[in-house]
Amino acid sequence: MDCLAIFAAGKASRFGGFPKAFCDLNGIRNVENTIALAQKHFSKIFLIVNEETYTSGIATGVDAEIISIVTGQGDADSILKSLKWITVERGIDVLFACWGDAVFLTDDPFLELKAGLSTWNIRSPVLVGCSWDEKPYAWFDVDGKSIVRSHFRKNEFEPCSTGLHDQSIFAFRTGTLLDYLMRRKHDLGLDAFDDNTYDVTRGEMGLLDTLTWFYEQPDLCAAEYCEITPNRVMSFNDPAELEQVIKMLKNFRKRDKKEC
Image (cartoon, rainbow, N blue to C red; front, side, top):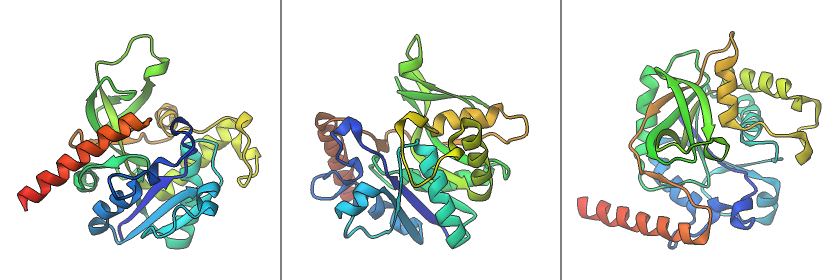
């Protein structure tokens, strides 16, 4: 059974606190657009939200199984909490995932990530769908298909002109990743705290930094990447950028209608 988890559990601090997964894209909410594109490729879709989103009722009517978690300790911690729930209950060996705040223009990323499974090392915990982007805000150093190091533009002395950038879509080998993330959480000292509480002073377990950590551990297998078509997944951080994304989505819809 092919399952997809849409992670929409962030605080959306850069967008005034409103969850970007639920922003309107010209008559359809962002997460509903993702689900509409993904449904024909997955037999089950989970929507991961934080407690505030869950209790607000904003996710009502979404065609997915909703899972509420306590967030705030980083996106990799949210993945860990969700994997504990999903894998224990469902027995899923490989879980596909995407970020809920990303805007998918077509279903190409889902198809191409699935195609990438054929060359994914069976010991690797994560397969990341990536594209070569101009001036990315984050990018990877790689060795063959292995992800060696993650970079962030804000931390670099010189910006990257072209870099291998994740496209907000992943495949998780659930058993392996659960084990690796538990070890990473212990390494950060975050396992000393109750999972059902949140305190910003504890620090975070971010996914991209965690991928670097995987490579650095001599007894762990590195995450890997597969290339997917660029400019099929968009992001936004303010209303002006959202309007630009909506225009791009309209253009793709017009193109699809012509091809039909």
